[in-house]
Image (cartoon, rainbow, N blue to C red):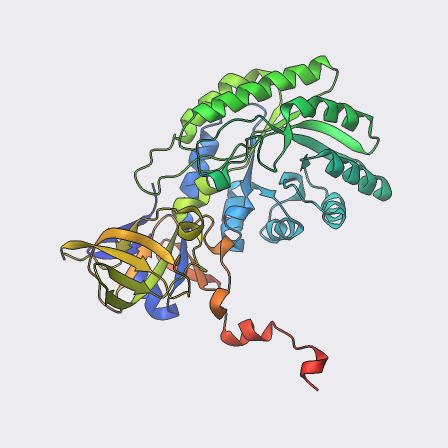
Length: 421
């Protein structure tokens, strides 16, 4: 459920007409809903109310790095799952305490490790032996110990797009189950490593519970194996991955997901950690764009809009579907159109052969379920400035990231001395 809907023929974000925002700040822009973020977080949290100790829900910052989004979730009790030093800084700027931050990612540098140790984060999810040894070295130089979980790779097929499947043996993520136990033995002997748990994340946008059930059963068995070896396990980070409905998908509800967690983990007596991203932010955002032209081609009709693949990369990168709705309801007969952007790439397409009431130049369209992996993956390709982001809260809205100006875009560059002489 989300809080974007048509009311009296006008598409609204909560109680704010989208056309009003467009008239006041221009297009394109991202719009996020406070009520939707709040509802999704509370539904997720409520699903685990019977688990003790209370799980840590660490929002995956990579899904949407807006300070306003992170701060909204932090006020509800969320921590942060981060994959860079910059994301640690973002999370802290939004009010997340270091004790609620887990640091994932395969390429942590010594500088990032040092920063995270100094800040006192909850846990490093280590993904290789070289990373583990570097972290031990950095911690030793700082006279401290690094809290560690090893990310194990259960080689479970997530059943999702290949580019967002992370639990198979062919991916760069984690340590294979066969190599994991020897790595824990190494970690147990390193004086500046404090082993505290196990981590797993098998992929994103999962629409079936079966991969979770398989992976979590393997993790459970591994925890028991570690304990038989005398290696304590205090935390289990189960990652994220729950899908959202972009179109006709019917992903499992958090409550059904929680039943699997309860069945496999409840009696282990561990601190559970979750890393939801898309499931919290995906349906909490839309991309609003204005039609520039309607172009009739040979056998195709192109609706050219002012947003491009640089603003929302998912359709180009993942062949992803986003529902497109007219901001002002139309009673026109739907016809098949291609909704495309102005970027100089054939792949700059938001939808092909989509049945829509034929819009006119100047009409507004909203691309739904754009709150995750939209603005966070945007770029300035074709020298197109980063677009505005706004957040609504009931009857009010605020610009939470101003539209980049051309002066700011161009001013970020520097000419070498030999070109200025």
